[in-house]
Image (cartoon, rainbow, N blue to C red):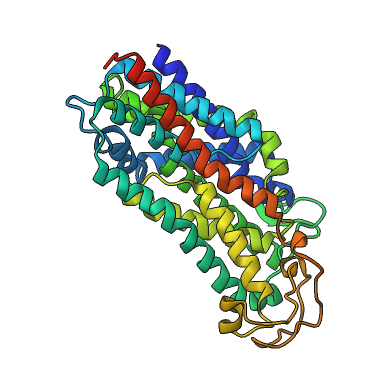
Length: 383
């Protein structure tokens, strides 16, 4: 029962953070209500955990440490405590918690204390933690430099006043029709936003459901199916409660980017996270999101430079650093040409201090959970 309470606490906090990340842009744009977002989040988190999440569950519950019979129940409860403590530290600093990294750190601390850590597996996982930000940055940079201007020219996702769709009851068979101000483009854009939000929720479930329950699954206290259901319920409760605030504020500290840029970031981050989760790699969804935002803005801002000068920094030209905030334009300049509307400074693109805080938490979170778990299991050899 203590283990279940700890798992529910971890899942509850995951729901509060992940729901805001997945649905904050859509809620902020007024395309759906917070309650609807939480309901969609719960369903697709379950779907992601039930399918791809099982691969991550296997890694966390049996591959990181080579302890015969898995993690004992008492040790599993302690590991969940350190995961929850890591979440608490991140929440105190006001940044989305790197839950997967904190979970791996706590389990690795147990492995170090009991000399059962599989260094090959942990090295493989950490190597992907180092590579993922680089991949996310360059995907964002390429999109920002070569694709975003054309997309920004052609795509505009807006929300008009009044309902999107209405039910026409004037005939024998009720029929859905456009709202009074709805356009075909608005309907298509709304559908795209909803699909990407669901995809993001699926990715969050694949990476985060195992974090809440893997130690209990390893101990044999819970089976995979029951564990996934319990974690989904806990994440859902967090989505319906504490996530209401995070849905309002997500992304504001990093960059005031338009909905189109947010959707590009969400799609890229969800794809990276889902692919690595399918391979059984515990990875932070937030990590991919943050670095995609930075890459997207850097690629957009360096369009006035040639690729060689942009990468090498070998230029005296001023780089327009707030280009993601520009309104859609009918003309798109070629690579290497000056933009007609130059934006002022780096602060308009993203907050460097916020980026530094996020990156520091990717280091501090797993390090603290590893150190505390190692000290605890060394001082109290309950395993």
